[in-house]
Image 1: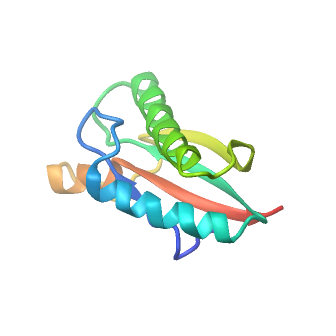
Image 2 (image 1 turned 90 degrees about the vertical axis):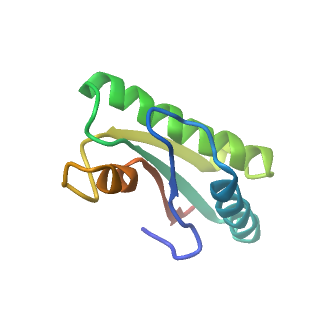
Image 3 (image 1 turned 30 degrees about the vertical axis):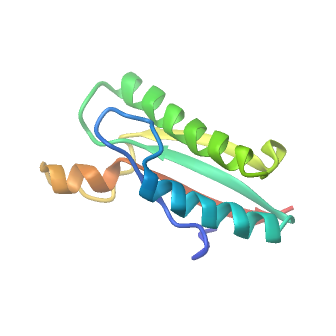
Length: 114
């Protein structure tokens, strides 16, 4: 399920690097996860529609792993994290513009209790 304490992060085109503003979001997520140790986390990696299906699935996976690695470095146990890449399969926006594509290049964080 979604949780308001775990905000999505976004990525630059064709990148899986955590940007400074998104690092702050992940810092807040790590604090919340540390304070709620019974919650397990699913990180969904998403892409915009540009690129092949296979490429975008791999890029979505790299994005999810980047967020996981960041959270683990902040003290969140890797055994509490599962990753999935949806590539371009679940867009938030379907227009063909940079403003729309930038919304689709994201990681989404969902939780459930152990």
